Length: 637
Image (tube, rainbow, N blue to C red; front, side, top):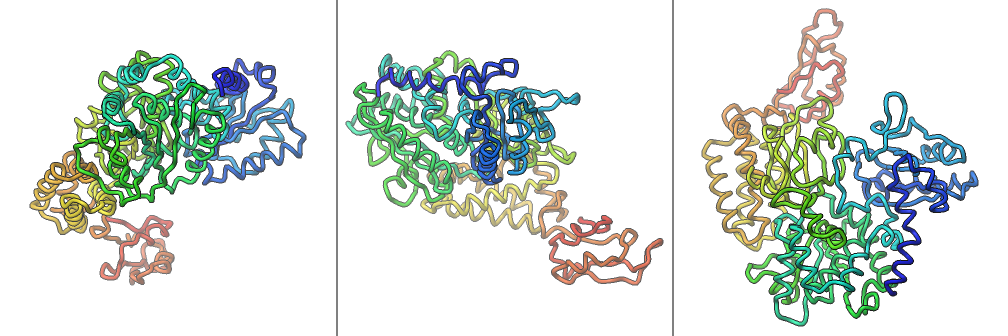
């Protein structure tokens, strides 16, 4: 394929992509530009797929056929971001944002909205897009979206994820064309370096510097790798990019290959991401067919190819040297550094490795320039960051905000606050490698350096919100259980240290801890940080140290008072029945798995049956009695 042919493809579907970004007052332009009266975009990401969005699409197309509608385009996209409301369907040109769709809802939308002269079905819209007077708010103006700046996610939820023509129309592969026709390898590296882009995989190392080191390394064979082995609990940023815009990663890796003199790339993606793997395979096949991968790309004399390698789900393989060891066919274990991968990496050759989100930023940097990109964010953290927002938050989903956005803005404005009237207690960032940020620091601007300064880290971008019902000792124990299980065992500080830390935390949650245990935890944590072989062991103590620093009173409460205020640590709980509230219905007794509830001789005033009581010796503290009691007579202490 030539650059002229690429331009022809780009123009052929450009109107389709542009119209999806039109504001409502420009809606009348849709039909004459595209030939379609309306376009219906349905999320085909993992979140919505698990909520049966594929059945919604099937029913949508079936009903349209039955109604004789042939001038409406149905598009299966990637993630829109607002995962809590899936399956999501957006109808253009109105921008009608339908949420929590079912096949029955799809039929209703076809018969009421998609027919000629039809009207928006307001009762099925996302409530945040409807004014009190019934008028429609463009979804881009809702609190969830209006503070976001989508660079890495620019095409997710906009293009058909399995159509290379739409990817090209949306701007993919324009950067590789520019690079191969107007830039030298040094020009490319300088642009990335000047942009200030730092790796989004956790460490935040300057991307351009990594590329510069690899280019300077001697050798005829070099490699480019993509880390798509996203293993943090609650993280799904990389998965969503691969599902919504896989071509942006293929293009960026090709650009990096040109910059450092590599001709082979590998994408290491976990096998638990079947939708992402499927779309990557389609994208690679399409790119080969269009001459955008393989030999003589765009007829401009540069060769570069990409292969997929599936990971088995080992968290340690997110570490770059362990990932490369796994690609080589060995057990995924980290290697001592130096030498660093830019000098001696995959198969002993100079290698650069970046994660999916980092690659997704390359096209905009090349097309809009380093100056534009570096104008976004903070002094030392440029650009935007994608977060997987989860936990005790109203708007669970995927958000992309400029670096420097405060935690308060993300939680209260974009995230919609804490549900059920609960209070915000902490936010856990960086997954098992990160730390917990207390409510007192909610106005902290989020960037690489600020998070490190308060005892946390950016990590790959998981952001778990915790409310007042969370026990901070238990949450640190949860992350230690994860890292202890995922340790590869190669070095003693990690293999043994995580187990010992977990034992100490378990002891405290069971009410058997001592003040001396807190001293042991801090001492052991510092040894692990200083002497573990890789980042898994070095960062494993972070959740413990941050909670110990910010919530030490909860640790001391568990130790001195044998009490868990959040009511989470089972060994410290006790259940009792308020005999004045109990009406003696026996529902709790019938559902008790331990037969620990019996009748008393006491009948409360106004009641006909004797109240019940719980035998603490038999009680297994499962909480079934409390969940079954309709009169709130069961108390947990």
